[in-house]
Length: 248
Ligand code: PGA
Image 1 (spheres, rainbow, N blue to C red):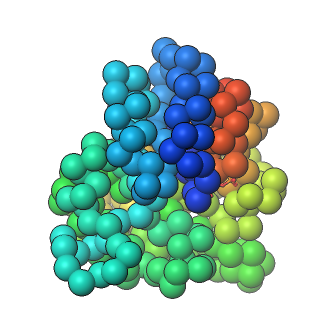
Image 2 (tube, rainbow, N blue to C red):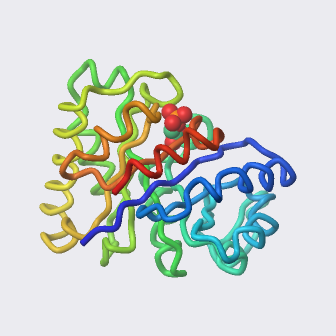
């Protein structure tokens, strides 16, 4: 059985103090929720917010990790460093990283394997651009991302895949429910073809891109959808809590 998961992606928002205030608001609202709930906070907040989350059912997530264990990589953070702070999840290959920081399936693959090796669950983001959608390349783009980005992963119960169409992120636009259902089932089938049936069944697949309290429940009720990756709405306590509660 796959446990539902809702992860908030704070992106480059909230100072430590603001983060503490946000958590103080979120925490009572999500008490008793059945979904595993993760807050992916900025690197500078990982330590203090990790301390602040102790004793709650909210888990700590990071927004990236380097593939090397240590070394001359100015500005980067290793899996060991994250692990030491209690980080349980890490977002990898977000479209913003791919667009602005030249990440690709190859770099995502190396980071994914490093995260898994150190017991941090990667949330690997894949999705098509608007151009790719219009030119009917979605299937090809997702297949390549799954093949190249997840190569070498042995146990997909330790990996989360987030389907996030580029054009749905932060835009208020989402695919139709039918489209989400078709694409997420396609992702699960493709994982099965590439990595075997057992992995296809154990991998949690999230939808992300303009999820809000009014569309969360119907999206999360789709057969193959195991929860969501939430950007903008994760910074709004009431909205985030409603989305978390919609994942059962
Ligand atoms: P959004 O972002 O919910 O604001 O569309 C999702 C994401 O970037 O992961």
